[in-house]
Image (cartoon, rainbow, N blue to C red; front, side, top):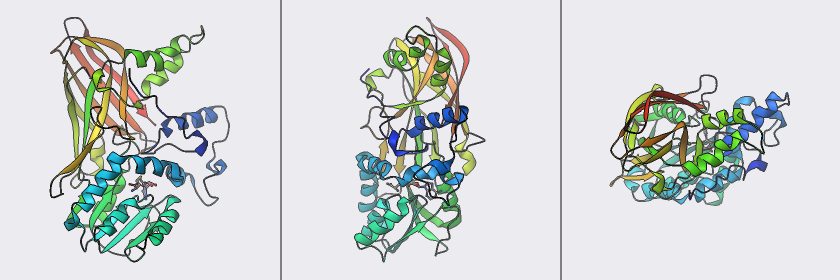
Length: 379
Ligand code: SAH
């Protein structure tokens, strides 16, 4: 239904690995897993992007070594322009301040900060893009103000003991995919002065529910009968994998609810795992095929608060929305309520993967579902 087809495979040839906050490489890993199952090597040393001295720990970061992912992020105007506005319209936050840019990529945020009058900016980036960032800083005449440090935030040594400001664009799909938030919290606890500024400082996760018969048919039920053969075992996998895609606001059937508010200046890394109750009220008679999650981020320390939303009613961003299909189609009447709980936690084995569990109940006139549980895995 008016859904833009995902560009999941557009970057297939770039040997991207999962984790991006900037591509749909989520699905690329599935290929690696399939290779693993076939007994084929997925050794990182096989990747043309990874140098001989890299270890598997670098696997995650390497997708960011290619410019394609940075191009996508930079061209996401909602994202990049918001950061630019935050910095240029609030020079008082940066003037003569020491700034740490956590995960600098091309160095764009550091350049904004330098231009806004920062005393010094430390731009930390662990992918090969750090080399480009160094060159970009030099080409633009900011070598005196910006120091690019190549390495992981958790491993590098900063030349200063404290910073006044931390800026980062750490958000992943479903807000928390990639788990880079923990890197920001680590930097905050290690280097940020008391009452220092962290940008953004609030992240809010929302949930709503949609009618999505057509697309569910195409993406999920497809596997039930593929040229006359039953491939429904794949249907199970497709169901368990949240789909990153844009949702037409006309598909929204219920109210939206804020599931979780994260206060980046206060929270601890444990707060990345949570269980939150929700209540969604139907705004019309319709069918429900999926829950949809999206997030907003806020920069409340600005002179006038600045924020952006990745929701279906806002201008599309590269994060799109995250669709979680329901096994069962719900027949819901106006004003009826879906009650539920959502649990989100990093996968124990690979903390960059997310485990999402939703249990819900609908006690409606035409449809009764009691305490149904669905598990999703984002990888
Ligand atoms: N700030 C840039 C890039 C944002 S994407 C921009 O706004 O365009 C996030 C970046 O953080 C990626 O380039 C990734 O390689 C880097 N990154 C992720 N985890 C990191 C870590 N632990 N240490 C250093 N860099 C990290």
